[in-house]
Length: 100
Image 1 (cartoon, one colour):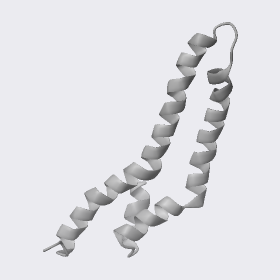
Image 2 (image 1 turned 90 degrees about the vertical axis):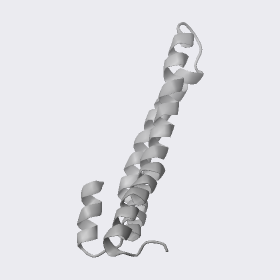
Image 3 (image 1 turned 180 degrees about the vertical axis):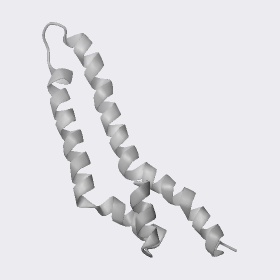
Image 4 (image 1 turned 30 degrees about the vertical axis):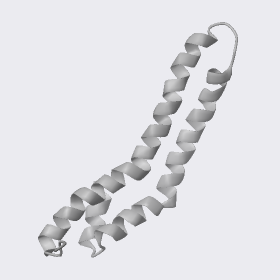
């Protein structure tokens, strides 16, 4: 992600344009969402199933589903926002366009 941001910044894009473009890139989001949905779909029968050993398997599958959801939210929303906050202040300091 950092490599893509730096490459686009060197081509003249503003930081906000780069962050928005990274969030909208359909191929990256589609790959992440398809992977996460496949993993969660595979874990749902384990989480909701019954039978011998289902109590143990439920305790394994539930945190995995929660981890996949939280990792997806972090990857697609939180990390770009933190990146914008971190590098946005550096860009303002370099260009002198900070708030007065």
